[in-house]
Length: 106
Image (cartoon, rainbow, N blue to C red; front, side, top):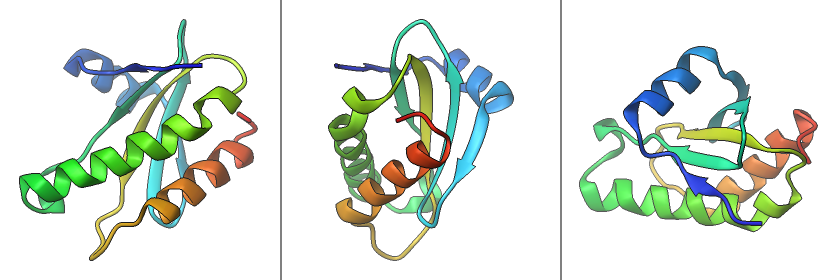
């Protein structure tokens, strides 16, 4: 099952205000029920230069994509990484699975 990307500022703002929050060591996930499965990533300038922020976004999107078809129901998600020295795909994937299981979404 594919997911749609959240791109509009209005959609991000609604989720940031009204979404449920779930935390892990490398990630904060905000989610809320919606009509279709959607996902967005927030990576601000404090994470480094543009190429570093783009890499973080790519890693997060791929880790989410691998587990998107396991999600029960349709939700909107925002993924917020925590500021660290290095970022790894394995860590993001582990945190996404951990949060989804804890929140009983998979």
